[in-house]
Image: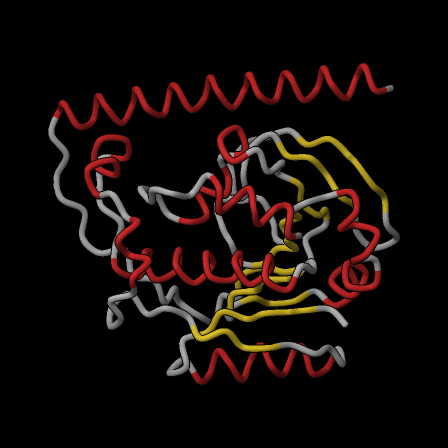
Length: 249
């Protein structure tokens, strides 16, 4: 049985009903995971947030909603290790494309042996390159040169969850941006083409990003330097990955 967990704030009844209807139509078993509501909860995990690092590297603070989102995914990474089984994590605004999604479910054991994490949604970056890894009838697995800028839904193995937890001792960026930093967490960025799901446009984000304070010149310079270093580290990592793949052949 596939372990599908849906992150949902209990008060978001319409979202719960919508995702339930989709999964029921596919005859899939699933469980709801009560999301940490950063606007109302003061969860112990929030102590892992370092606002000084957030300001130093990103030039802004995480909103309460972003902290709640991070904590919710973090707890499910722990759950994956506890179960010692691959799981699929979905946010409750997911709109599922049945054929490719079912194909992932039916091939889950095979995929989990080869990939520690697979994003199941479209890459939202404006530009990237991708390398084909595995061909399936309705979708294929690719290695992406840039992360997807979302955490709408993904397959995660215990090995992948351990990597995410190991490199997440300090929180200073949104959870999806952290997951995209494969050169830091060593969790390769694999995804499906075409996508298995997307964000349902019916729903607005539950996160809430808050107001951003004006950035000083020094803050802007720090942010640009950080982004430049990230670019160099990412491209160097991609270069090494391509070399490794080339010699394997």
